[in-house]
Amino acid sequence: MKTYIVGNWKMNLTVGESSIYLQKLLKRIKPAKGLEIAVAPSAIAIQPLRIQLDRLKSKVKLSAQNFYQKDYGAYTGEVSIMQLRGLVDYAIIGHSERRYIFGETNKDLCQKVAAALRNNVTPILCIGETENERSFGETVSVIRDQLHGALSEIDADDVKKVIIAYEPVWAISSNKNARLASPDDVAESVRLIRSELKEIYGKETAEETPILYGGSVNPNNAGAYLTVPGVNGLLIGGSSLISDHFIDIIELAKRVKS
Ligand code: PGA
Image 1 (tube, protein in one colour):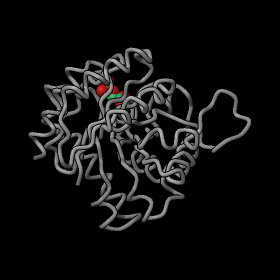
Image 2 (cartoon, helix red, strand yellow):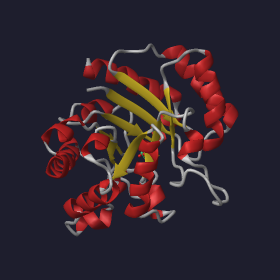
Image 3 (cartoon, protein in one colour):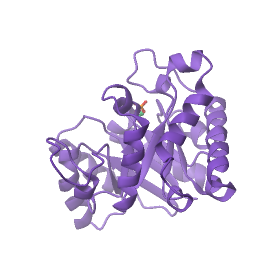
Image 4 (cartoon, helix red, strand yellow):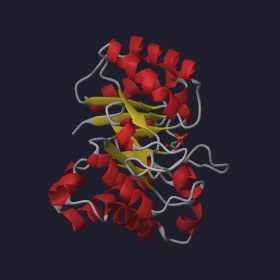
């Protein structure tokens, strides 16, 4: 299975800064077999970065951070995945900031997963429990609910095209009291996700679905997360904004997974 290193820039970097970052990235990294590198810039930077990547015939991929689930219509201010089709290969869906700041529900996310698949964009579905849920012993039921909720209308063939990102909300660096998840914490949740997938879709799908880890990943801990059994890559927020750190993590991934 491929290894995925995805940088989620969130609402950071201007279009100009994004382009300079990309230029530096492309100069420094060499493509490696089995390694998929993607960045998720702000929506307004997607098209210029697409042009930049195409001009250089680069294999680096672009991801949307979000989109609206309808393909077109009277939804002022929204951008659909149909409009992003051809510009991005991936779309992050259900990031905890979308769930908790913008109130997106499992039902919305299920429609988004379906919309991405129908438009040939690979969904990166984020799931993960909050600190409170974890302290009340609800981790298993939350992960189960989020997974079942977002995939309820997706059949086994299509689920194979979905990437799952396990991102415990308490470990995401933008949280005030963020703390690091241990590799054991990650291993346990990844096992749970695969066993849920197995229950719904069968063994083959469960084994073939890529699962990424995200939450305060940096060049010092990336190696430990990448060697957790069942982890197929990383979704990186804060550290991906520093191009040197992102490049270090990519280099590390090449060594660890080769
Ligand atoms: P972080 O963010 O790496 O800054 O913790 C990860 C994410 O929110 O996807």
